[in-house]
Amino acid sequence: MAIRNIREMGDEVLTKRCKEVTEVTPRIRELIEDMLETMYEANGVGLAAPQVGILKRIVVIDVTGEDPYILINPRIVESSGEQTGQEGCLSVPGKSGMVTRPNYVKAVALDVNMKPIELEGTELLARAICHELDHLDGHLYVEKVEGELQDVVYEDEDGDEV
Ligand code: NI
Image (tube, rainbow, N blue to C red):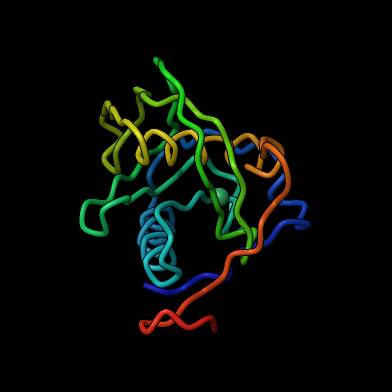
């Protein structure tokens, strides 16, 4: 496994529509393992393949830090409700902004064995699913931000700004 370089806003690869995965090759398995490692290393709750420069419809999500979802060719098939909250993205470091998303989504996808899976989420998981799937169509959350992007203030364990 390896940490991959996370592409940042302004990189054209983040604006492209990704291609469907037709077969999980050893190279794609390695990509997925690297995406998980890269997401955890960056303390993210989700990562989409284009964020590491690969235009394939693959996302990894883990909102708890111990329960990763790997979604291949994911699609949202149901959504309801509304939530408005702060959102950030590993491709837009140091920033966050208010985005309204559905409060519930149901997605269908394939797992690493190309078996169909269904994933339902509310609150943060619903937000993460929407955010990561947008990446696969070349969209960043900044297009949906209400008001201005904010600077994120990082604090150390004593609460001091760093
Ligand atoms: Ni993102």
